[in-house]
Amino acid sequence: MEYNRDDCEDELHRIMHQQIKKGRHNPGLKFFLTTGSLDETHYRNENAIMDSIDDTIALINELESLGYKNEIDIRYINYDDGKHDIATWKRAMPEFLKWGWSPMAYPDGNNS
Image (cartoon, rainbow, N blue to C red):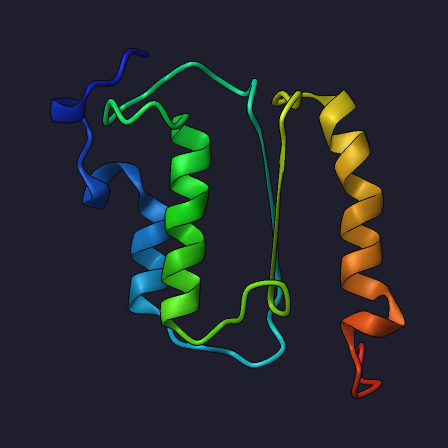
């Protein structure tokens, strides 16, 4: 599907962003997000930032507006050579597990 600036409306194409805007902060929720710079080649808004990266950064901004803290509640990794494929997900999984379940992830000791 080809995108251009005129085809994209946040209300229709950024569905998760809209859900977060309607939401509220829930202590204890954590968000692990990854993208790969080779995921796609679309530049919907012609800003030379890949749509998946642009959308993920916008999603992080929405989460932060609700009170979630980057690097505490939110972890984002962009793999420069990453694609939307199993090889990239294989690299991300150990980082996800370390971030989400290491003792450092829950300094208060509550990881349930």
